[in-house]
Image 1 (cartoon, chains in turn brown, yellow):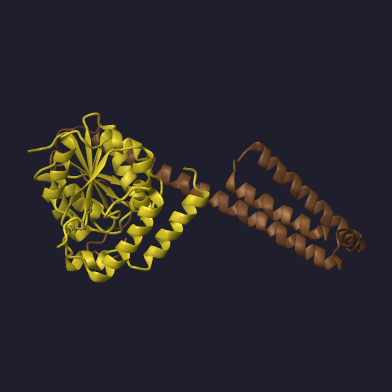
Image 2: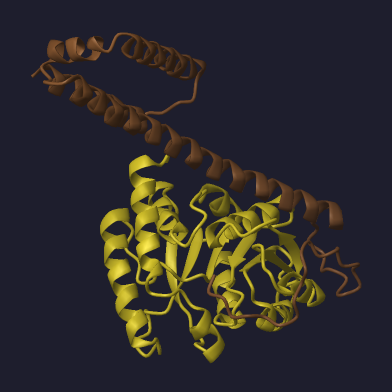
Length: 141
Length: 229
């Protein structure tokens, strides 16, 4: 049936997108267009309930409700894939940012890193960021 | 002996009871000890600094791999740094081993020296951990094309250029496998060096729980399928 080809094409597109994702203006625009299309179709389906049944028959599905369910499942995959990619990107950025901050603070505290030995404990210690507890609890890292 | 052109990177997470001693031990031989505090909740940073280490603090916990990268990047800021040693903060490693590995580097025949517990047959490793490590090793050797006897050993020495080339990005414990793969990919000359590891009651309690191998494997697969490198 036609619906099977369409759904498989959907999932295929998601997998391709996962493998070669580049955040671009084009992908943002595409997502927005799809969103408008979907909301438009949703509005039409609400106003004309018979539309879903007609559309379903067009692609070889028995009931309109079934078609809506299939479309919901397919679009969910897109949404989750996009979210996963974005979260992974944020993770990587957070690490880079935290590293920049840590190194910048250390350099600022000591001037430039030199090869000469540090002057021992005669360094003013920085304010601890959070409450520092003297008792160490053995926590596996 | 100050080994002024060597920077020792000690990533640390909640190691306040021992980090001071580890740093002091290192500073008998190495003038430049960089301790990366990976968002510890205890006095790790204070103790390390009091013992004479240069402390770099992550604002929150990122993982062993990220802490190592931060320390290495910080070390490379200093133009005098010609060699970098990575050294665990929990007292398992021996300073003499680190010194010997640097001396191997100075001979100029290799770019990276990797510590191995398994080169000398009489290495006392807890049985359960040995089995797990052997399995991880077989996987690593099969998938990275680099044949090592001890991939997950934190005691390594490398030239500054090799450190720049080994740009692993995984923040967690799986960084070791990525580093191993990069050894082959970047065409670096490497050699393994026998090291002794002291399993004290403290370090045994802190070691990687076996279940974490699930996480390591997951990170690795995720990186290989979706990663950028």
